[in-house]
Image 1: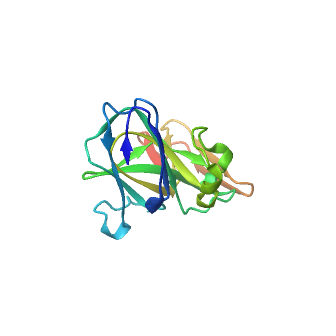
Image 2: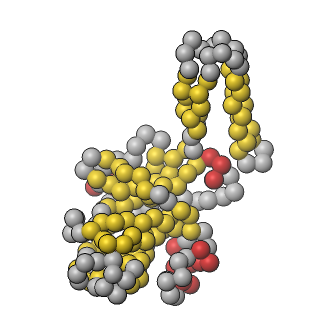
Length: 190
């Protein structure tokens, strides 16, 4: 796909992705190649507690930088019921030779949530839901999910109660009595 100063909206069927290049996002006209990397062929594997839930989108050539953020929508296979948001979080990761870099991610659950620059939104209805992120250079992207976690600090001088409501019927409550820790404990709750 050739990108010029006008930008544009491009659908990449091989990975069920949509890319939005704003006007003047490239310094000069550039031809980009979009391909899919199979999960089994990817050198970078999901981190502990993560599962890849989208195709892996590879944008080449590497090193091409964009002057403005490029919006990427990745279709993913994660079933999102009402309890999903209480237990799991969806993230888009940039896969590099050194591992995964987490990108700011938003959920797109209906065609009304698509950016206004996308025409023919109805054709994308069969590919919902999408994970939305922005990139500043050519890279490899994947949607992933993991169990939601919270960091807590347990004080040394008093009791501490961690309480969290999950959905309508599930609640987690952890009580730490006074004096349980000789120094402040930093814990991750999943």
